[in-house]
Amino acid sequence: MRFAQPLLTGRLRQRYKRFLSDVDLDEGGPVTAHCANPGAMLGLALPGSRVWLSRSEDPKRKLAHSWELVEADGALVGINTAHPNRLVEEAIRGGVIAELAGYMGLRREVKYGRNSRVDLLLEDPARGRVFVEVKNVHLLRRSGLAEFPDSVTARGAKHLEELGDQVEAGHRAVMVYLVQRPDADRFALATDIDPAYARAFERAMARGVEAVAYACRVTPEEIVVERGIEFA
Image 1 (spheres, rainbow, N blue to C red):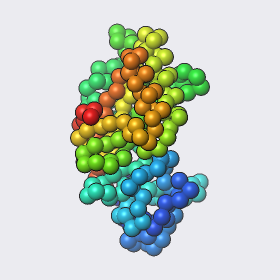
Image 2: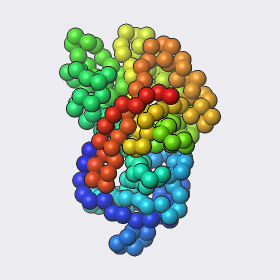
Image 3: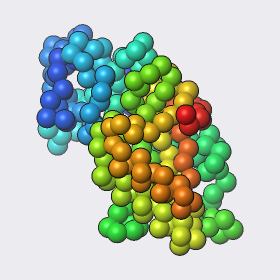
């Protein structure tokens, strides 16, 4: 996924009310940018951090700027949770995610379960359906170890249960943990942050749900799903 226009650089002043961030641009002065990330962003929202913003020309938007990247632990990290579904779709179509390769059809945001929408639905006359849920990952508390979630997510636990229901109905179901940073080579659940999610994950795996983790190459020009990483 290439950014449509060159990103603007600056320094983070503060993130507040979850979806707002004040940034001092290197060129252009202070702006308030949209932060499309509902999580805690542990270690990624420190005042003074170097950040990259995109700018929209849509006159209907209240905030023209969106926070895209932050420099943390010497690496660029993608924090925009609006991107993972598109990134995974591109990776599937490009054959990068081997576990999901070879399906003829792909649809996004398809209704299923109890008033939910699956992120991606793969379909093939010979192979059936695969229900794919994508979770954005950017928490890194120990060197090389990416973790999810970074805050309590009852919605995430609900998705795991509904994926299990699809397996019992005769379909495949796959959780894709997308790590929007290049400095991770392992993935684990942050059981201390959300024990309930960890229990839901174990139940889902026992029911036949599959899980994979992939890390991205992140630059100011593009974010690309690059490689699978192991579960720790």
